[in-house]
Image (tube, rainbow, N blue to C red):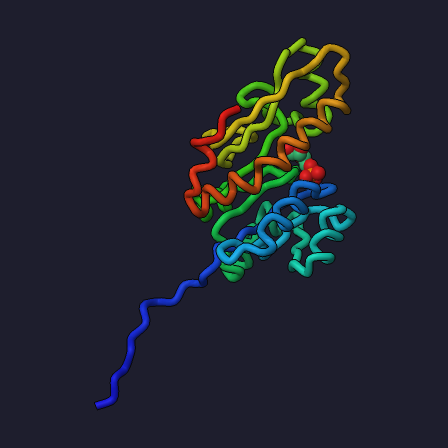
Length: 210
Ligand code: GRF
């Protein structure tokens, strides 16, 4: 008789990332560029809470679909879980996303949401600690080092388990702007590689020495 080949359930070959961002989107841009030629990983959705945000121009430039969040639906509706499942998102990457992630989304994407914070958590995190406020606080406290923290996201701001940190020195005469610029460089250098390691086990996280 005729041979019928039975395929196992075919999952997509690629890991799909959704990037959530509220602002300029320089991290989003780096991540999109890093994975643009990847056979295994694709940035397949940009999610944004602000129709004026620079990240939407970046999404359009790279022809990546974007969702502009409706606040009511995000916080009191399905928090876009249907749309994210429909897009077969495997990992949610927060890159300067300023809204708190609702408990439902944390539950549905348990262990699959990560964030980057521009300081060495647990210090200088929590509500109100974002952007410039972080660097001002670090300098005001006379810290000699700062850096970046990439961590899992839970229902609390800047709270989930740490994945990766990288440090930089805070020199005398440092201003929030000079520190912000160096921290941005650290973010751009590491975030994509950490994401790649989370999805593909490249060993980057364990082998990276600060
Ligand atoms: C980054 O510094 C990130 O750590 C923080 O928000 C900033 C986003 O910058 N959470 P950009 O929009 O990626 O340029």
